[in-house]
Length: 344
Image 1 (cartoon, rainbow, N blue to C red):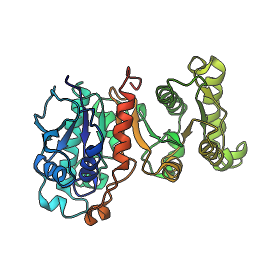
Image 2: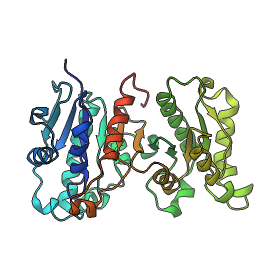
Image 3: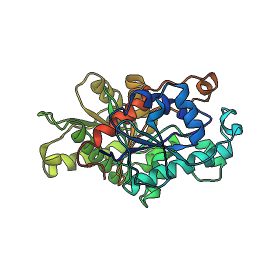
Image 4: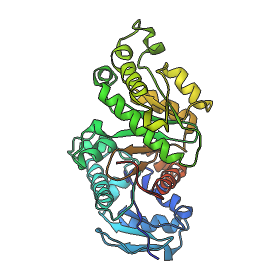
């Protein structure tokens, strides 16, 4: 029986992405199928070096559909990556162009329905910009690829101890207060609710969500800022009061200071946190779930999961690369795509 595969873009070839991808596939997806977009010759070399059986490797065309069986690792020869990219272990313009081209091909496979989800390795934003493209992150780039605004999709980090969704993503801190709108807060709450319902399908107790404030102590009634009283709290109260939120299947709590919200999540008292800004979320995620959290983009017409770490040029230069993040990203993509898609 053939399987509609996962599509994997390995990320920056000067970093750990190709290595952690192939290392992860040694044990992951033995009962599933994947298509990896990259430099086929280099990917085969990495596969051999990490003990992947040769009969699992299949040469496939750029465009699907592909006819793969359980355990198959299809390799798309998306580009020839020169040594000058791989060996530099630093961002380069050519490296930026190559990794973006591979990402776009893998995303197209998911968008066209030939892959059931997109899994991405770590990219270098600096390299892609050096290559001549206005790029602030894979999340925003993928949104634009399907004609959606940056703020129509949600970046989440889903891990065993913390599930957190971000109202704003890749912004200078000084710009964050001006980008927090009621529409963005509501979108993030609803997207996180959908993700939690998909993750906890078999639970009888509704999952709970807490929303953080932006300012210290959630501003203490305006003492340290006005975003809570003007924007965040009204949205939460409206969702709580209008009707049972998500038909009563999700419990939406009141706004809390970020420090209290993340402490409750770490203690297992709440299931999800809506954070106002990037580092407010990612510091907590990486402290609680490093190597096990998965970066998820919610709101695309296809599911995208990714590792929770960067390109790690230093580790690549040493020949290191811990695959746990890629394994987690693959396994979560499998978990979400076992049933009807909830993420669009």
